[in-house]
Image (tube, rainbow, N blue to C red; front, side):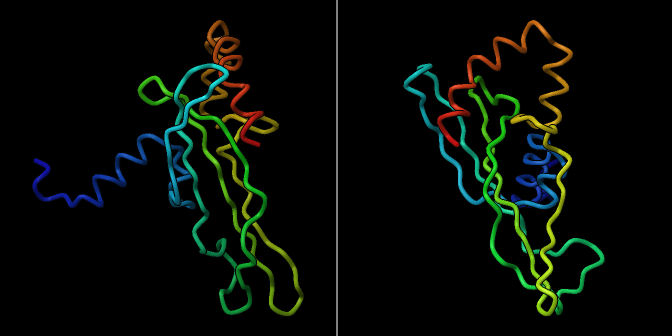
Length: 146
């Protein structure tokens, strides 16, 4: 059945199943590695995403220029195959060529005031007994990576 699908479409479908939909729509993976925390003696994934250089809807590309990235943000997502998953997001900013106004996207897949994706935050709220263990286990990694 997979004969007619290309590797690229399989890869994209797999990534969309693993990561929040908005993340895959606006970002691309720029780097990833498996690291090991000495403190908790456990491996984890660090996956870096860069926002695509595509202006938000309603803005004219002739009037704006990319001015690089905002400060990266490290958030935690669901574990994969028993390893913690941390996403480092590099979101872009654009500047109007004449007025110098800066624009940027507001991403809702990150939980407000949290270092978790919204999906993970909702899951942990429902599984309250699991929440404390999960957060305690990986909180050292979040502090160490910032």
